[in-house]
Length: 271
Image (cartoon, rainbow, N blue to C red):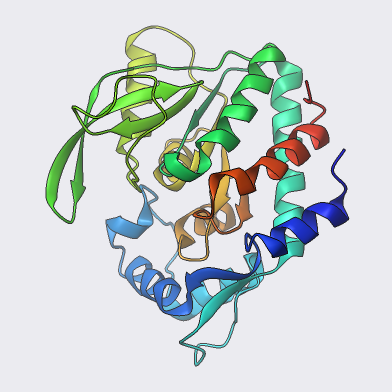
């Protein structure tokens, strides 16, 4: 059993929390774009409230522990490890409750190179607990607008975790995939589930557009988010996202393994 103290030390040593690699400049840019309702940062969420840049700074200071001073505009961002630990505890509680009901779940990531292992560990444990881990619309095309124009990707699943990959990339089932913030993959997956007559997920677990896209459609969603991803925290504040864990979402993939163990232990899902 990984103790809370040991995990706190790991969060700081791996820079998952504390001083993180995400810059204050990058975060403030995201807040400005979100305030302007730029879809690149709203991630499929249609905010109900008006959010100014100052509102978002205050929200992120409360949820993540970043500086609440609008005049602080440079340097690395900071995440309070206590907020990360609190988020992980709430995240684990939602997994425990879903597993107790053996409810259907869906997991997806826009950070497959970093976070696939974290989610795959959860998918394995939820499946072992009797949850149906949904994998609808595998192979279906998803057209996503990027800075290079509209690109076509294919929806795929690795160990029960959804991701998108470019056509012609390594074969289905490989761990490689594309980085994306888009909500379109989760919409395509949910459409596929409905068309197939199968169950819809009672919980979506993921990041970026997977969480915001599901929450916007009224499906409970929980996930991970960095300081430059205000959409998930706005979704939580407005009641459309259940839990967001603040942490750096782009460190080495093996640094997330202790988080998997901690969450599964807290959720009573350790195998």
